[in-house]
Length: 259
Image (tube, rainbow, N blue to C red; front, side):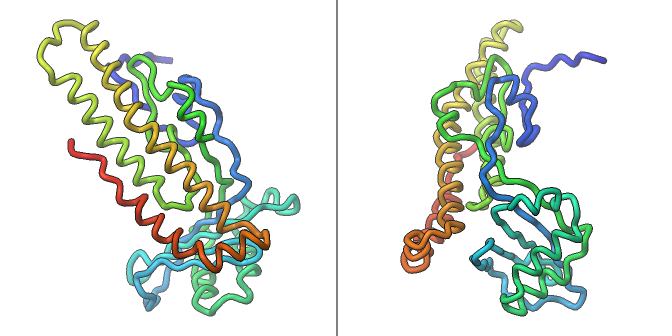
């Protein structure tokens, strides 16, 4: 065992963050869905347009996006049943499960699953930070310790903003610390600590509402897209899909400012 002394500790240790637990943040909640993610490789090229496409079915939702001329990223989300427990550790069962659910889908979508090797398939339960926790408790930082990325705002992937918001965290955190430390007058360690603490508090204030907004919106978009209720399904298919598409673009257009 050894001890490392640092001026600032930034917890970027993911959804199961040890630093977040130390700060008093609760364990992320299960969103009620699981997701399979994979990468399909087409040796001779796939020929798909560079567009994101998705299919909402009775059991789950599949989406895919070409990465280049030969590789396609895809995902499949669904509400797991008891009989499917343990399947997440078996890529053979995962691939067969998704293929069975897409038996009535287009040949295009079927080919993506067929061209995915077993080592390129992963699955995990979807978890999120309860939004009110971000607003009611001021524990994004404490002293010279804070969290960022999934350690701060784990969210369902329905907005595609998980990694993007982590980069926003980095820009704003660097700016807040820079503003605090670059001002003249830091004469001793105690003064430096106070400035770091104030910089992290400012970072927490700036990221609180943005994190709340993203986590809440992602959860609600996933709820609407996955809901099987007749009324929700009717409203979604007739009116809400266009609105949701615009919503995704608006959330992605956030300006986190300059360093």
